[in-house]
Image (cartoon, rainbow, N blue to C red):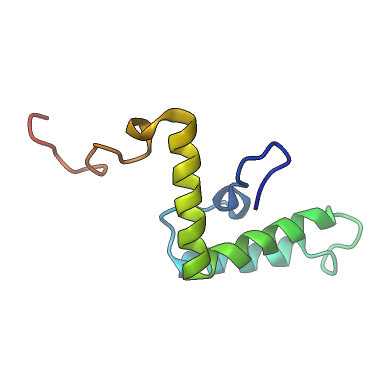
Length: 102
């Protein structure tokens, strides 16, 4: 779950999904990626580390408990690096929602 530099791996980027993606969406993407990158499907043509990374991401994001822990850790890392006020959504309304005075 941690990169060699000490940061968290971006499992959402590994799967190519948005952090707000539903479990069903992620499952469909995961299945497509496995069909594309599994060494048995294209032996010698894909990096076997890619399927390991995909499975690792899916293992975390497919579990509601592990996903919440991962999301919390990502938020804390972001706040540590950029400050709590800069955290995504901090002090701002979601996209498309008008705020007083806007």
